[in-house]
Amino acid sequence: MGGDFFMEERTISSNQQHRIAIIGCGALGSEIVFLLAQHEINFMRLVDRDFLEKADRGSHCLYKEHNFLEGMPKAIALKELCEEKAASVKIEAIVEDVNRTNILSLLEDIDLVIDAVNNRFTHQLINEACVNLKRPLLVSWIDGSHGAAMTVIPGKTSCLNCILESKEAMPDISLNKTKSPLPQTISAIAEAQVFRAIEILKNAKQKFEQRLLVIDGKNSARNTIDITKSKIQPNCAVCNNRQFRRLDGKIGSAHIHPIGENSLQIIPFTPRKIDLPTLAFNLSEKGDVLVNDFLLIFKKPPYELVIFPSGRTLVRGTTDSGIAMDLVKKFLVSGK
Image 1 (cartoon, rainbow, N blue to C red):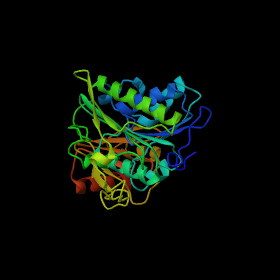
Image 2 (image 1 turned 90 degrees about the horizontal axis):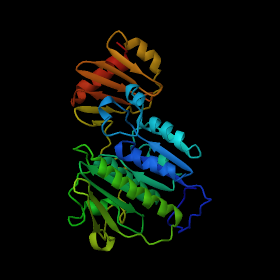
Image 3 (image 1 turned 180 degrees about the vertical axis):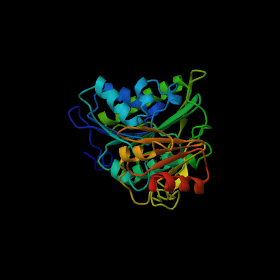
């Protein structure tokens, strides 16, 4: 389908093809996807840059034990899990970092976008892309026991940037994950977002309540905040003035940036095609190597490199970009 889904105000009938993109397949995103699969959505595109590790077991309860041991990318593991439960749903898994160079192509043929990432910059980038493409967006974020969720209908409701610029509307919940999410909060936010997704796909003409949902999982409490656009931000830089600074590369365009704790991500200016088995063989005598069809993990204490076929590399154990680049040149480029 694609196209100006809400701008044309079409009513979605049960026999139409629904295409949803879910960005972020961590604790929250995986639960949203699993619930959506049970509703037999026609097509889901799962996008996540990360992979499963033993340390994820506590918060990523839907995945299987071998997924953690094999270092399986989250999007791939979630695709396999959902296909076992809902064979009729077509699922596409993409193991990529979402950035300004690929986000429009990832979303242009999609009817509804669900944002389940855990960092502020990517939240804002997704918001800009959806406003630009006029795609409905469900935004959610969790930090510890608290979570929030909102619906963005470009041209009709507030966008994420509207509430970020409003002192009254923005709850005191970080868009960058600083604490492990509470299971009760994950479930509450996931169920709310799936309910909203189904309602959007069923009827594009309905009038959506412009309220931000706030969940306190620890105290089993929920609240809503009025985010009516005319009240909180009638002249938003993004949805009114169409200033897409992240999408245009004016903010955050560097090819090396922090990701997680004591780690950096390096994205090559020109995507490469890495032969992972050959690289694994070359590195096997220089450190511990784990390789699968989707990534290679190379451990050379105190550092760890996670290398993807495109050349995208996570360097763990440092926040010094010079050290990170030297490690990539030494082990990835030269293979020494």
